[in-house]
Length: 93
Image 1: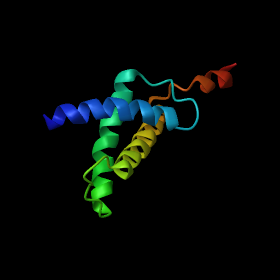
Image 2 (image 1 turned 45 degrees about the horizontal axis):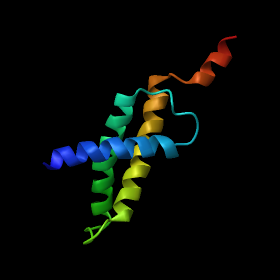
Image 3 (image 1 turned 120 degrees about the vertical axis):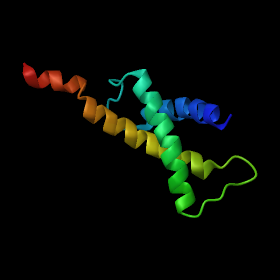
Image 4 (image 1 turned 90 degrees about the vertical axis):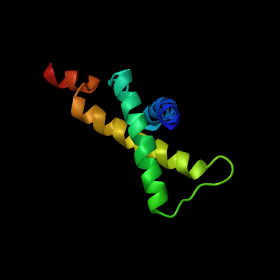
């Protein structure tokens, strides 16, 4: 059941990461955004626990903020790797 939670959280975190990523990041497909979100959740959880986070009884906002930041970085990396930048078309005129 935990894997389903990670997938659902990954979808939400991926979209939030895409939203907060600087620049034009609408050029990566939805499936890659979801993969970045899942990676952001997993990596964010490891970073959070590595720095002493142990969770709270309620919503752990710090862990979610770290996950969104990780997903935003992964979205930027995925956008750079895929090379589907809309601005690159201006260079080929």
